[in-house]
Amino acid sequence: EDQVTQSPEALRLQEGESSSLNCSYTVSGLRGLFWYRQDPGKGPEFLFTLYSAGEEKEKERLKATLTKKESFLHITAPKPEDSATYLCAVQDDYKLSFGAGTTVTVRA
Amino acid sequence: ETGVTQTPRHLVMGMTNKKSLKCEQHLGHNAMYWYKQSAKKPLELMFVYSLEERVENNSVPSRFSPECPNSSHLFLHLHTLQPEDSALYLCASSQDPLTEQYFGPGTRLTVT
Image (cartoon, chains in turn yellow, purple):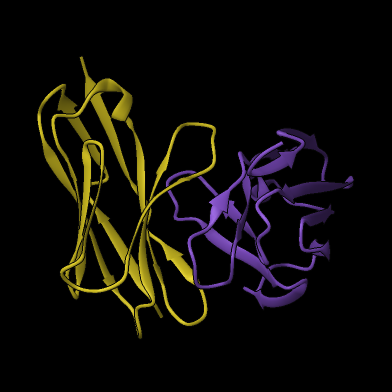
């Protein structure tokens, strides 16, 4: 069975303080790794898809990377509006499995 | 309307009630999903429909009954729920079962 573990559970950052979130996974046949952002009381918002080790994607202050066992979401010089829960999910041939998420709080 | 919409946004129901959740996607996608999200737990996949046929049912109790009348609409019929069924129920859609999913805002369900 696919397993997705995200760390840390919570991350408190000062505005401008860069950091990284980790998503480690075990899957039989990775078809894609997805990152989502979820704000309180809302549905997850799609950010990135990564398909193979070595791949990188960027969007504003966010950069996602992928290895054979884990993915990182780097937040560069975060702003308070980057505060959210970030979810990682892996897709095999049958379904999408989610991690529990990392809740990021950025203080001004 | 754009994206994925869900109604109602909030629902309070007793254990003997029957209610339905509605989801509509305006993205032209062929696959739709129901997820359950409980506090501090990963999203749990409940049902998957691809081209209006159910392709996944993750051992969900029979008190939850999905219906997909066409590729744009998805319903979740609820009856005789338990308090532990209180959660955020999310609908999602994707072009096919292997591509990125787009989520609706969710229905916050409280069972009393």
